[in-house]
Image (cartoon, rainbow, N blue to C red):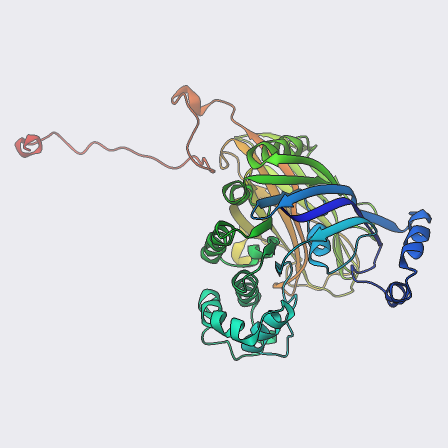
Length: 431
């Protein structure tokens, strides 16, 4: 029995439009003329529109665990929003059978003025549960979310991590037939992420369906026997997770070391700041392949549209399975040099910031970069995941002494020194 059926689904947005429906669409829906309105709209010139999904089809059986992977902007979150009923497809048909627990974005389904306690009951009621059923699960939810001391605090005062903990606990514990989880879990700490993965495994083992969107390919392959790969809004591959992930890694290895957005209207960001380019530079050249003993520079270019804004930059370095290797930022506490623009008002214009990784630091392998732009140090304006990737190639210098590969994600040259301590005395040979 299929829990989810997706048939030739496409979703189109007007550039600058939110994913929610306009009043006009809802009025057409009420009067029964939405289908004609959609046909006319799809036939219109696509100028000023983008297709987030194009002709996607698949089926998921009840009790399956399926991972959805792909680069940022490939349509993963749009697909989950369609499945959750947050928005409707432009074309195609979706059939979902069962009660759904959804964790797609922070605060989704929560009322910021209500307390954590009130929001638990509100979400349960939305899912069709009785107050008795919710009360039976209440203590388990609060304990899992680790919010015993804050459950009667309005959630508008929760940190992002607290919101994630409550959101996941509610979605996973209120007995959903289908659990949809997006990359929002990445906001939580590592220990909580591990606990969430365990809970998703428990949900699946009880016969419930799990759809999991993640850039952490290790988590996907461990949790989900099957995976779907989306590329530029289309289904590129579907099958065993290990096979689909191999295709994804091979596809990302074709990067030329640079990604550029020339149109500030569609570039990642908002009215304050948008990305223009992210590139890998080594030996003075843009490249996706670097020698292990050479410096690697990550260049981030961005447009500032707000006069006087204070913009900060940060990167996450990930291994080929999407596991974090390190994070860095241009903050003085994390910077070996001094960035003259840190903490200063930025005039409107184009900027370039550069982070340099030393040679003989990373081990051989494939890596990717998350590019992050912030204002006022902590306010994230742009978070572009796996925006670019590159390969570190071992030149073999260290293999002359050691024939195999070196253990670990990093392979730095460290200071070693041996000193003679003198001859053995008679006691050194005693057992």
